[in-house]
Image 1 (cartoon, rainbow, N blue to C red):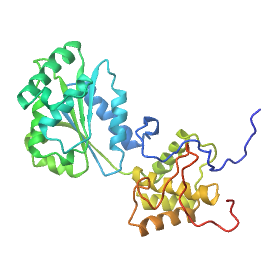
Image 2 (image 1 turned 180 degrees about the horizontal axis):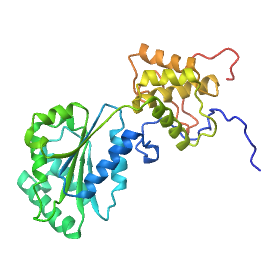
Image 3 (image 1 turned 180 degrees about the vertical axis):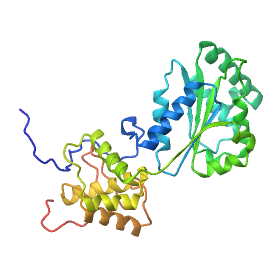
Image 4 (image 1 turned 30 degrees about the vertical axis):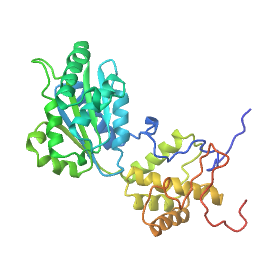
Length: 315
């Protein structure tokens, strides 16, 4: 019979999986009011099939990429052919080759279609003969689009002209940082093609609390919300409700809590981690910063952050 734990605390095995890693695991998607609305609108855009282009913007770390991953998973491959591209620095010809590669599920070489004419011809054949003829619709999701040059955006818009008298063959979703909106306004022939727009904002305080609770639950945490009021207030004030910043702070703070054997996030623990991050150059990507060599819970040989040990703490 399993033993009952009255007040479970944070330990090396609770939660059993890392809750605050940067991941595209769609289980970690938290449907805040804004994220749920954005997903609903983008699904409508893709399923309508006749709206041409859509636009999703948001600050760095606001959850655009995970939302795109969820959208990709929600569109049935029986009805939609899904293409996701994250490199906003691609020239249009290279973009075409990447689209062809993903649609055909094979890595094509530049020599397979050596020029724009051959790539556009192949693209049109795919649309008409392999996608539209089977009553499927192509959805192209382009991330980091604030980096695309106007000429490339104009050429992408031109792809949406490929259609029959009765139906459009594809939908393009542009995804990027807020400056993408101003970027598009300078290209009116593209801006006017955008039928649906949504801007992701930061989480509210209550949404941030539920976001953290959600990630802990998905990771398998058992117990009450492991933040005291001061800890959460410091977390929200510092992260401004930006999901990636919440994850960065909590990831390092969790290691601090485990190293100090605190059992939960205290105000002083969050403040210590935040102050340390600021001292070393701001809220950085903890997984990539040498100051905090984070351990992999699945590896017995990995290391924890070397925080000063509290007097009397267990080794």
